[in-house]
Length: 231
Image (cartoon, rainbow, N blue to C red):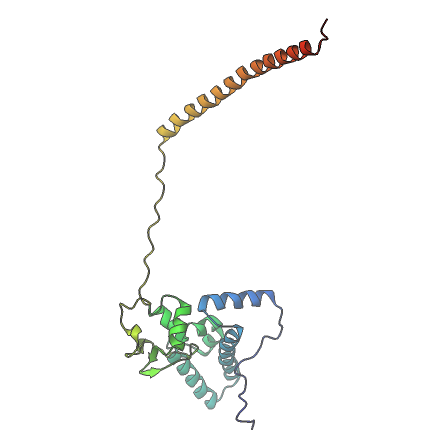
């Protein structure tokens, strides 16, 4: 027996700390499910791993006790909504971290439309606004049973129970107006106008060049006259 004051870890850390594929996967899960840190990912992964380990152990045994435990395990998973009824023991091995994360209370609150975002769903739970089967739940990682999913509601005393509460109102995005497309005729008309303007600019530049040359010559002649000594 251990010390009752010291709680045992409910998850296992990854065996290797620096794996790029695993780190990127964990970051994506944190963003998608609004998790606080990677420990929450590791906890859900440990739950899925424990179910898989039980299934492996039971498939290796062929006794009456193992058959009873198989039925109990499959019944528990179907009750949690992780597997459909009538599943086999091999289906347990296909469970992933995402399957477990989908059954968290935070995810259920967001999917039921009680919150505008997955992070807001976490806030509602921790601020004591959500009840499950008439019980106040403040843990976002609470695994919701399939039977309890319909009983996830707002607390009656909570101000958020009112559907017209501003925090529950969904902001409607204004439709983006697209610029009208130009017709082919108008585009064809604009092309010759541009060509005419460019031709005029070129002609003006050509006219300005000889004028500038003449002015420079006249200025040079005047300067030479001024420099000549007076007789």
